[in-house]
Length: 416
Ligand code: SF4
Image (tube, rainbow, N blue to C red; front, side, top):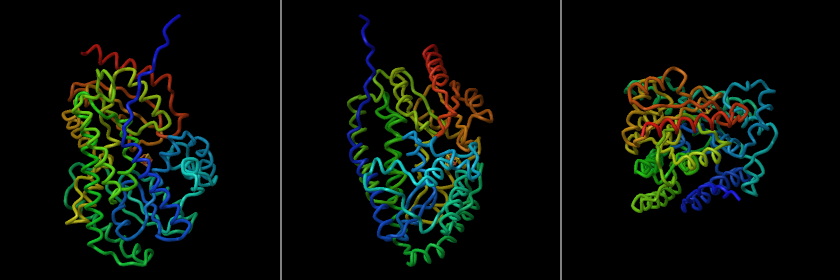
């Protein structure tokens, strides 16, 4: 009888239990605020001015995080058609269409995960930053009209090379201009010392999250991109709080211990890959298993790095927020992005790049204007492009992607 092939084992990160508690507290706090009306709730885009909102006493909810939950639970496709039916194209951001669709249906997968949560907290204000894309503004404005809630935001320049002082001052002025409206809604004056404190906590969270990600520069790597998509939760939803800082202070030593003990996240690591673009949320398990079987570690990504804001500075809260949220990878020109990936190659020592061409997110699909070819020429490393989507699995062919990834790893093997 043929011996049954055993799937390689995932290595559990012990800190995950604490992370689940941080995430649960985030959602339960929002749920309580929804029930009692206090504190007030701000909905914010994922790389919007969350520090300002927290400093002004708002609890902050991130619709994109809900979009990712819809993707990871594979419920997104049930909801996208409802948003299409009210005029939002299947070609635009599938976080947006699945989230609006879920709202229209009055459902959320969070109620399966967290029993007491039956609906999402209603916002008192909606705040966007177009640094990542226009979709986030359209998304917030839809809720603004639907719920009759003020929608305010920041319009960021796009395709920036170096982020100069003029750009920083212009964005900083826009962030300051949000304050009077927020004061009116929150019923309290901005306390600049509180803002400094929150920005300081956010910076500490960022520094720790960066250190967590950089543990993957070790060979073998103790941490993968797929781990990162899970453990980034507190950096996304709780930056600016002590809870997020405590979490990464808890996670980091575990990964450092793995490095000291030479514990590889991918047993027998033979290849190291960089993931550019969005995750395929509904296929994280399958893809991480595939790479595990192929003894290939996806060591770094532009996606997980997007919550590293090293410019934040408690001494200069407005300008440093403006710089941090404008220096983001997604905001930058191809030239600046390529230099960034080159620095990542030097740090993480990867031997190939996977570009995810995400159908409904052209903003974070970097393969479309010749970047893979330019990087191959400059860095001498090959790349592969897989076609899919962040949430809409109808755009993703598993069979084709697996074949492409396996062939790519064979090519890397041939180069060894
Ligand atoms: S960056 Fe992409 S995934 Fe994120 S909100 Fe914009 S279109 Fe959607």
